[in-house]
Length: 288
Image (cartoon, rainbow, N blue to C red; front, side, top):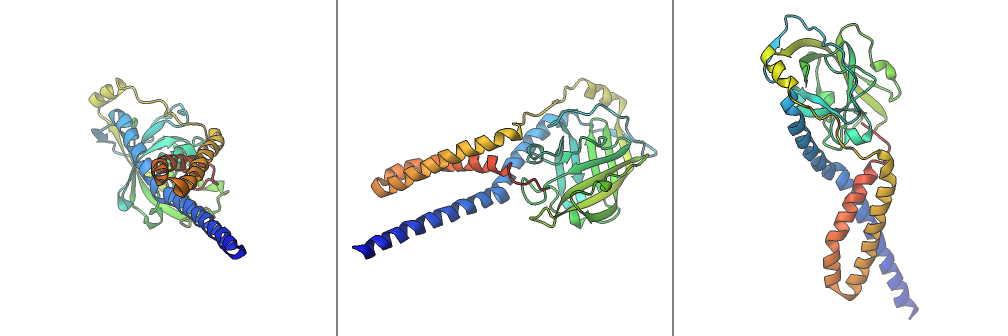
């Protein structure tokens, strides 16, 4: 009697270990693949919201004159688009570099001027999760173009230097009398040990034509995007996690007694696990 009982305990322990491993693997899959799908959907909605207010027809200025300074917008505001043709980047970027903003797209450092304005504008982006917009930033070469479009115009920057610095190194934000752009992301991939920095200088400016400027002024851009504060992530992750574990326990009971109960609970477990993974990912140590 003792031997079968011991085997039964070992079998249950094995099932629990396999289940725990499957949950960890599922969370990793969400981080690497599921988050990309959510970010792509968010980018589509952001682009539909902001594109009507961006200039399409521009006239090129004879020299790269910085745009006038404007009031800093609130966090979560979609500001424009950033395109890097050499590495296939074309994303809407937002105000703020918190995890809530970076899950939607590249984020602008609020303490820096807006791209195209006088000073060094800085934008951060994920490298391995949530659409990984800056995944191939290390492949940029000197002189290659970074094109930023905002309601003020289309600004072309040329890469001047690329460096790897410590995460606490704030000297990467340069003080300049002209206009420049600094991009940052985590380095190496799948780690936040250091920061990869790309610095570019303003090389060309295209401003809206008089007719288009009059049209753009009649368009009301979204002033902010609804973002749930990150402080809510803890209890929401706990709530969905508790529900997922409760459904999982019910699944084991269902498998042992009635298989149709397990089949009915599987979709509910998947939904709870997905929501738990979403909110839990926002609690992880922030990395770009």
